[in-house]
Image (cartoon, rainbow, N blue to C red):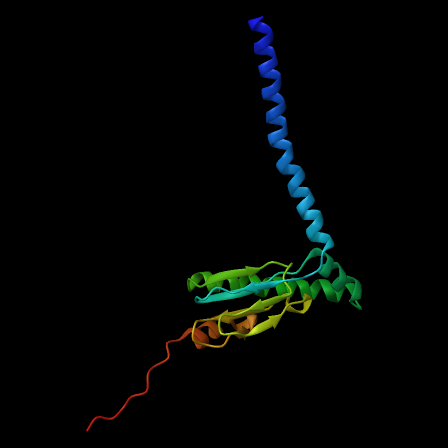
Length: 164
């Protein structure tokens, strides 16, 4: 009698364990599938802090870019160059301890705290925007990120007044 109850309990534990493992996997796969089928929508709110904003594109948008390219080799060269400059820019931003905010591919707009709204699309693939509270966001040239950081984030010196 006790042995049967123990076996039943063990069987139920195994079933619950399998359910606990499989349920999150199923839910994640459903969420990923739903994300792939839906287009961009919603607005990403950029945090009100010193940061660099990097925009991601979806797999569908990347395939569309490849499909629309006139020359496949030129497409791969441009993608390779873009990734190289993005990685160099990320390293430079990390060196200067500037937080990198990555906007997921599901958003249609990015809204900065100063009220600037930027529409997002596959055209923003290698775009990095610099933002600091009190200033307008600036699209950075990823080929000269070190200079861009120094120019944008340098302290603004107050105007000197003459005393009599």
